[in-house]
Image (cartoon, rainbow, N blue to C red; front, side):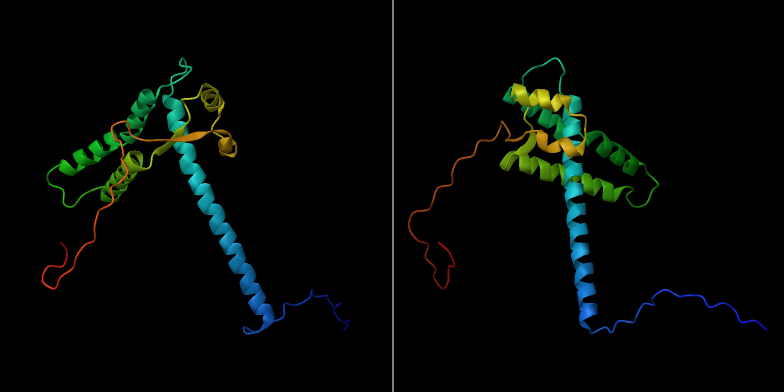
Length: 186
């Protein structure tokens, strides 16, 4: 009886000992790749949020205007801060229907309220980043933007504070505070 032809097998994977240098090297490489992927995903998410915000502003900018004043920019920001009002109202109506137990869409409602509160606080204290529509040149570039996230760095953004709030530097207290045994602070 004839012998069967021998088939060549590729190089077999050697088993790597878990405490070897090679295993440690592979672990380091995987950790490094995971870190890179995580940073890449966080950056992409941040760019996506910024892109959505800028697209919202782009849809609200009047195409006939060549320049905006600070008051007009603040009005657009107020509209931006109230963009979730209709959705919150719908959730409230759904929850007001009698005969239902529990609250529907509670997680979405909490996220929306938290977002509104965070953005309003940011607008009042630090300033909310919006596209620079106060400058004619930057407004033109912003209008020509097609929504591509790769071209996002070309758009100039400006922090705008609320027109209603003016901040004054805090006054330092004169003198020292005294602490006693009975009355902690005076």
